[in-house]
Length: 509
Image (cartoon, rainbow, N blue to C red; front, side, top):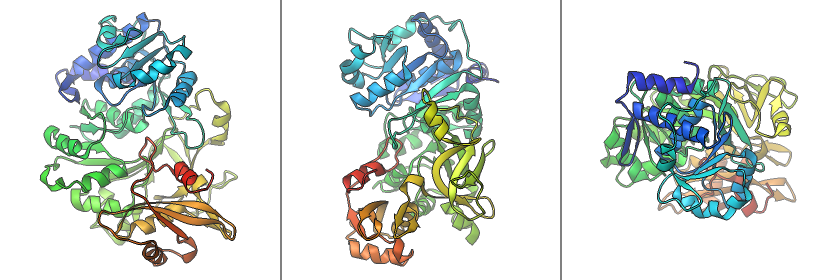
């Protein structure tokens, strides 16, 4: 196999009747999935689409989204996946940057697209994935019927870009990251967890974390069950009903299902693999999850640009290991083949074991930013891609993350890593979640400020939390101010939006 299209043809030939996708009452098998993506690829061609043209998508998770991915992967188009939470000015930027030939949209986003579509006369077609299409658009099934069962007249090669993902835009406007067919075929193999993979996919399809696990399931002709959005009850009941054995959860999702009042009433014993990525999972939360669900977790670390970087294996996320093993619950594991990683200083030189530097990788996925050569140059340290994450390696090569480079706080001349403070605060039983930022301070330059969500029924006070922190970390690292909030602002990845916190609490990002 050289392309993802080859993978889909293999699955349709060997496992034609096996479930490919499930979404609500919809269910299609491997043969139907191949037939539909080929017909879709043909419909795009008949509408003027050519290889490497972009197909824009604004939608929550649904089968049609993955058919658009499949058509691009089979024929050589590029699926430009847009954050469906985007406001009109943000969507204008995404459309301008990617210049799609066709835009596919869920019915809920018709009013948003209608506001701005006249600014994009080069978009040939608008196709509505669900519901009734307005006069200026075409319904998805109607569009599909325009294609031939034979597929497009061209097929993708390994070197074709097939995905265009956008970063979350924490340091400016989102940057496009194109990914080649060959790189995603490697991703599929790396992410496959089981010969009988039944995946519950709820993280948004416009993220690498929404595409990667599904590629892994396709690698083994597995079943992919989709939820349009995360709801703890629907999540737990779907695991029980479909006998899900693999899923992807970011930390807030793990917290939500563990806190579900009827958690113990659901049979989730089929779970074998739970991937957590996007942001570091707090160690207290991981320990609680292992206690309630079992040693099914593996911790992955990566980025939109780099793809997967490292992994703490499922066998290592256990509470009955040696002291050395349990200490490494706070790590993100080893650099994972074929990625080459290093911890570098500002000059691009490797730092000694145990010393903090920037995590840098030789990535098999990163081919530069879309339409942004300046940002591409700035992202590199020679052959290495800079992740912007600060971390260190222990003597056994386990990677520990300590902070984002831009989130490090300098107080009284001392470097303070916000993640270290957050971990200390989250060890308190009354803390559900904590985020640490720096605030401008006349005496210290910056002072540590903690924004905290208390656990339900907790009466924790700032003084109590500050005293607790002093028992966990050096006093100069302890918060000078504690602010309690009901919930954290979040990016679409599930990460806490620290830019918004800095803006809200009087420190420029």
